[in-house]
Image (cartoon, rainbow, N blue to C red):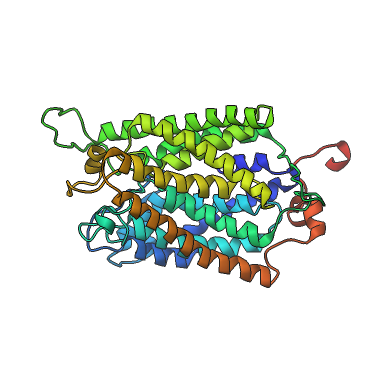
Length: 429
């Protein structure tokens, strides 16, 4: 799923290189000791409750428990590894897209260990743990009285990966041929639009696990005597609806917006627009009305288009538009939640504080929006300091970018044993 979209957007001489990079991250929870250690930090809390998490059906916490020893946090760590596995994978995917087609494989191994073993778990603890300083799940001393409502991770998931990729691409520089001698942008087309579309539809399906799946249980009544049929199952259904509406609105807005701007219909732009809408709604999917999700998707499309225009002017090269999509649309999603979160939904998802601030445009004052501005600044600062240093050190020790000759020939041929596709009979023997 994560390989098909970037695989289709890359040149055919980088297919094997891209596919190989997903194996280290898939094995990361078992081979990265820093990740296991920091996961214990993330979930450590005086409360027995867990933050909202994504359910991973194929991962067994009971099986992992025995691998983690007999510590008091072992069970919680096992559950967290299962629930967050897709989130950690998403961080890696966001960043690999930004620095694709020009990065040494050893660089992926190093930066992915730091990103998934240090950077992401700390951000996750800040905003998802029940004792994180910015978490809306805290029982007291909430940030600005509200905490940060980042339900499924526009900030924790998407901004972290997007900002990390931004620094990687800035330090590494653009691909050879991306800009001509006059500084004009040159389109470097991917090799398979079909893979892009197929991967996008699989991600669309998977987003119903990311967003509605972030509820830990379904059978939970909200205690409405007038509507006993209403409960968390209703919120899960609403979350699926808001997710769908935001993505579809962003896709259609991108389709017609790009047609007006460049004069043709582009399927890869539509796919990225759809994913940008999903990334934006991920923060507030459970606490906004369906009509607000349409607003979210509409503006997410223009955020993506605008950041892509800015990237061209600044000669910033991101083959997958990952920083613009995950970083830019993720940041918009955080602001959107601070503007449109509905009081009734906020109190259902985060009970126990009836006077909690909610969306500013919904009459809830500006405190939730202020908390979300703090979240954006803290994520940008933390990821910039940590991953900026990591990429700078990789560049300094010549471990980041491949040689120009290898880049021109393609990493599949120079580093991975041959091309992914056979084009003529001579290459079969």
